[in-house]
Image 1: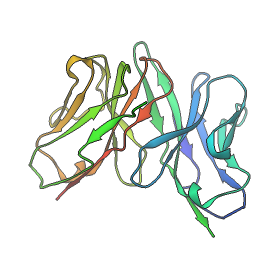
Image 2 (image 1 turned 90 degrees about the horizontal axis):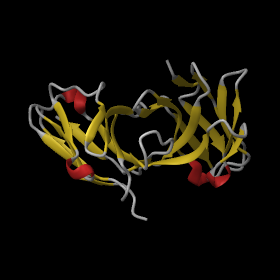
Image 3 (image 1 turned 180 degrees about the horizontal axis):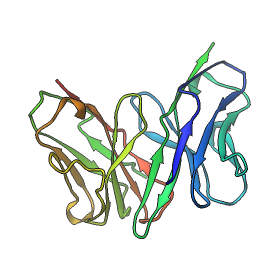
Image 4 (image 1 turned 30 degrees about the vertical axis):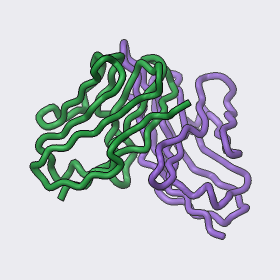
Length: 115
Length: 114
């Protein structure tokens, strides 16, 4: 069965320092993986997605993630945090069966950015 | 392009009352999803529609939850009767086709059951 595990429930960084949000996945076949961001009282927004093309995926707002099959990981990074990056981040795996497609979400990581 | 619309944004009810949520997906999106997001957790899929037909409702508590998508566009999700544990944010999402990777989410409806 497909699943994702976000290794940190809460990450705190200072503005201008690097961000690392960790995600491990479990999948019986080559997965499609995503990172979504959720700002308070706003809808989920897609940051980036991996669909078996380049292993280094660039997303919006300077975020990127690297798919590492050997480590079953899909960690999200950003070189320099901004105050506006404070939000909840979800690592997601896509599951397809014969006639359905759905997303399986991790538990989420709260990113706090300190001035 | 207009996004996924949901209403109401907030709802407070007492247990055993009924409540309904409405969703209007992005124009032209054939697939519509309802998710439940309990505080501190990731969203969990409740039901998935392709046009006006249900393709996955395995996680929907059918004794109290129901959903429909008339004419393959708007959708409503109903809870009757509500329980305390139904307090959550209910998210609607849509995608262009059934096996599309990218889903677009609405702002959600925050339900509080007292």
